[in-house]
Length: 128
Image (cartoon, rainbow, N blue to C red):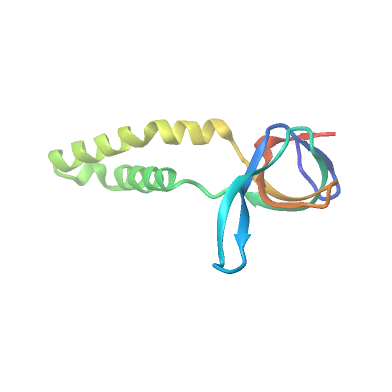
């Protein structure tokens, strides 16, 4: 699904927003009395498309080490090259998962109930 401003969307999963607190005015502290969430099926309108999600630290490290290996691996001492190969191999699953996910974007949505969600991943949205 291509997300664009003005498009109607529906949440496909329950989203936990945070804890609901009861404030004690005298003490200035709060007691957790529940949990706020938005249920799947809540609809709204896309207000802004933010672009691709940032890559994880592991993905960036994989890219850095792989570039190092590709450029300088042939000149490294054998022990250093083997250690680098092991580090790359350890990060390979994260890299593979990142590539399988493809391009993911985040959006700002104004829900019909008036709430605004910002930084919502496209994975939890469906077109209406």
